[in-house]
Length: 89
Image (cartoon, rainbow, N blue to C red; front, side):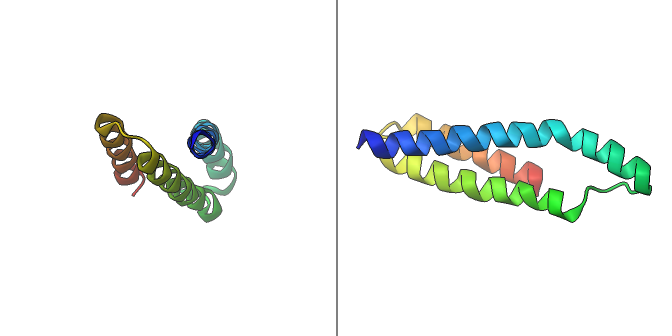
């Protein structure tokens, strides 16, 4: 049982770190890509990373909520994921 929880935690932490790196690098991409090509939008491949993070984090939260018995943790995880989902969409 602990092995399953541990794997979900590792996946969640890894995706969170990658998402943080993605969010920090995004302004740099906007500045360099937009200034060089006179664009105001991020490249499509860069925007698709958002949806990849959403999908992976959904799976990690789904798995974590199956293994936890704390209702408040389940509520917090799904509330924060829904907030992230609506911000990205």
